[in-house]
Amino acid sequence: MSGQENAGVDRQGDATTDSQGDAATDSQVTDSADSRTTGVAGGSVVVETSDCRLSGRVIDLRERTERAVSAERVVAAVRRRRGDRVDEPDEETTVAGPDPQADMGGPDLVVQCPDPGPAHEHVGLVEPGMALRTRTALAAAARSRGVSPPQDEELATVRAKLADLSVPEVDTQAARERLAGTESAVEAGRERVATIRGRLQAARDAGRETDELREELRAAARGLSEVETERAAAREELERAERRAREARDARDRRRRLEDRAANLERAARAHLVDTMREEYATAVAAVPRSGVSDERDSGSVAPFDADPVTAALAVGRVAELRAPVVLAVDRFESPNAAADWLDAPVVRV
Amino acid sequence: MNLRVVLLVVTYSRAARGSLRNVCRTHEETVVRRFGRVALLHETAFAAFQALRLRAKHGSDVQIERTEPFNEFEAVDEEVRVAARAYGERETPSLPYATFAARNDHPEPGDLRDREL
Image (cartoon, rainbow over all chains, first blue to last red):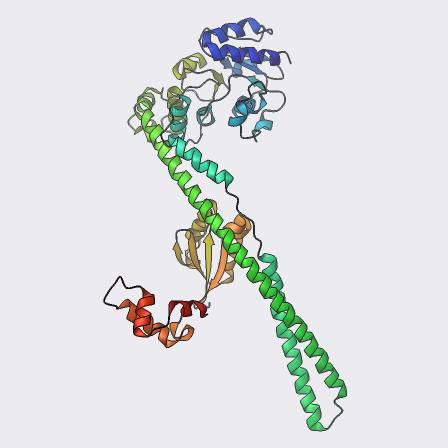
């Protein structure tokens, strides 16, 4: 597709200055009939669907496509780009793997845009009924602005230790199963020996022939001895397995302590990041345009962290540094352009 | 229900601990006691089912054992009980047990270590 080769140029433009990137994109858009760019400064976005190609900092998919494109598909297409890039090797360190939602966009929806930063994951999609972990999102917003908490260094050390820690897998189940089988076999063997003994005694008392019974008893005793040997071996095997399991649990315990340490550091880091944004966030919450529909949390007097998820997401989006487009599916702003201005980020309205 | 025996479930990861906590919260009647990442469950097939379910989910991060109450009158000789009581009531708190045992004719620690219950 024609937009593919332009993508690298777009990104270079973004890497230098925003306005350059915008200008470069303007001249590269080939399908001008469906293109729509605005004068708003900032990164440029190209959205291609099966029936149209739109570009610009603000894209309104509601007017441009015949079939409605779901917000989830658009945001998945925005985030899918993270794994696609091969021209920037440092990307490998930040990409954990292919986005599991990558297929949601389908082959007929492609979005070209700057890479989503840390905040996009939380507030890159704003839609009615959304859920938001506000503090986590705000911490990501702080990171998008380049804030790094003092816990990062130790956190990296702890994570490296966790990655290096190998925990042996010891399976004691087979040994338990084997022993459980032999226990019941020994029990059955004993009962059999006792029964034959009883019959032998009765035969002797009655003066009957005992040869056959004595042979039977010898066979039963041999059988019992065999299963007793097997049980002893099974017990030993289980003991060995349990010793190994005990040592493995020491390693598991070390890992669990490191996990706890990492979680504590993550919490502290998040608290630090949230603190750096607290005031700006509160100001942003107060400035979010209210929805027409009345919501008891929408009265304007609620504490910033109790704001409804849409309000909170918009406020986080405003304080965050967002280069990838925010996919917007709510009616809080007069126009998509107004939303992009307010958020200071590219917007795709669906 | 055999009240003398309980299941001991120990977890070795944050995820397994979280699942154990959920199980204990949901099935309070099954739990004898919970200490952080460890729980004692009543000796029922339901408790065993819950413990096995945790192990199916978290593998070796879940340890399941069966425990029974400790009865010192069955498990050890009288001299061990006497030594423990006497050492607990010693006058010099800093006195190591080995010295205390040698002076007062109690079993030596090495000897105790070699004895099984």
